[in-house]
Amino acid sequence: MVASERSQLIADRINRTQARLLLPGVRAGARVGFKAQRSAMRAFGDYSESPDAAFRRELMDVAPILADAMLAAHLSGMAFMLVDFGPIQLSDKPEDRIRKLRKRVLAHERKTAATNRKLARLAKLKEARQAREAALARITSPTPTRSSGTVFGKTTEALKRKLAAEEWEIQRTAQVYREEAVRVFDRTAMLASANITETMIEIQAAGMHVAEAKAALGVAFAKTGLTPRNAYALENLFRTQIQLAYSAGRWAVNQDPAVDELVWGYEYVTARDSRVRPKHQAMDGTKLPKTDPFWTTSYPPNGYSCRCQAIEIFVDDPVELRTPTRPPATFTTIQGAKRVQIGTGKRAIFIQEGGKPVTVIPGPDPGFAYNAGMVLAA
View (tube, rainbow, N blue to C red):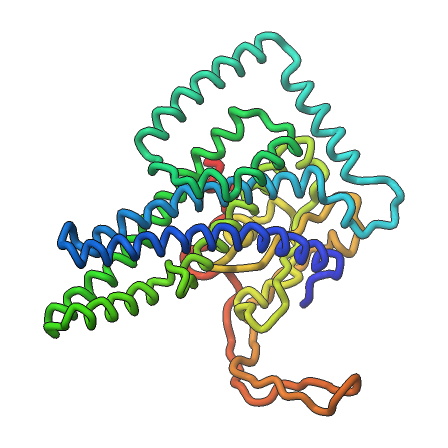
């Protein structure tokens, strides 16, 4: 079972958009990691505080950068559905589907805001939300760094204008991601700090000289994956959270009644390369209605750094796209195979040699059996 060419093209475009958000966040986070490493080394030299405590304290400045990345991803997901989706539809119809979609959305918004009573109630809700968000920000938000204010600032402002979104809506979404970023990154910082603590214990037990101890700490910092020398953990974290937020943004748009009536369901699409996990590969090409329970637990991302996508199928799409197709009960693939080239030039072909068959049950990775749009909107 393989996803349709139309959905593969759309998924590729989404992955490119997410990749553009990934690199600035990882770079900014690595700069904070370098600063945290220097603070920890300084604390080790002057005994002002524990190096692991200094490292963790400085690292928390990554959280607001992560929150900004998630907000930008969420808005990008919304913009994709409301503005950018039309031009990449492979349809034989001459009409521009996205123009019709936006027209219905605007008509629905005018209808729901028709009475003065409704407008007055919205104004009161706006005032109450702003007061609550301000109080929550003082309690839960870490002090923003200069990086968190500039890395995604231009992107976010451009997306606000593109969506013509209300400021209170943006602030409400931003607060959700501030809290989520603190929760997620606090766990990452705690694990990194624990590794530094373990290294400190080893240094003391071995009675290392200062130079040897600093070298050992340098290796420990690199292993955390949070510094410019090695930023694998940051890349994993930002890629996962950006994908979660982007998917949540698209899902939020699809729940609008004006859009919901146009969506039949979704098609599951993988990145179609050697890094795709077998459990995810087994779901490639799955096409199911939007109300099917499958999307409650398997709406991408379905694991850390997952690049799978769920592509919308509309009610006026060809019938072959709207024919339900479920993943198999089990899926067998070959793992560990080597890619061997036979021939040269244009006549070269590639075959897989070796490896062993592995049978898996299709589904999300442990801890990812949920729909990000449903969870983050709750």
